[in-house]
Image (cartoon, rainbow, N blue to C red):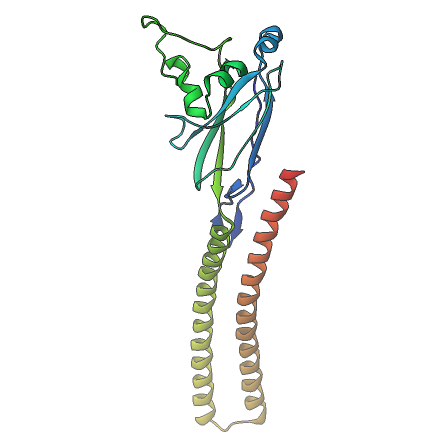
Length: 251
């Protein structure tokens, strides 16, 4: 019944101890749904198709708002509906097959989803109480709901900022290690100099000290280079993961 439009979540990006959640849908993109509901084809033919509404919820399905509508193909219940989520965050969508004939929509001048939904029974989010005197329901067949799908809508800028922030934390950790290494280098150097000053320094002692200093300096240099290289690699890999996931989804 209806059309499913679930999206496979993109795996989170992990940088050190930080985990960055990637949105399942990017703001500004268009969501296109297609499917068909079960209904008597004779009734569909008589009314030239039916009105289908896309509903949106931003509170976990507690309430639903009609956001757009389309008419099914004439003489059928097949539909294709497109919509661009207007905000970021967790949003849920479902399709409502109204059962209202396309002929009623056209003759009644129902030009938006809210007006069409208002013609339904209150049980389907409409404004008509079927038990009220002279209640008029114009749906030609029983309304139906499609499956609910949750989207995490976000922006690429949010992901990039999160990547930079996470890597910044890793760089701070590396900077702390660098400071500790410099302090150790200074302490070891002073200790070695004090030892040499208190004894008859040999050429081999001076050479050993020089080798030790060179080794520690090299380690500190590598630590700095690795930290900044990690920043570039993390950002590039993160963006690549997003692009590949989006491309795979569109195929």
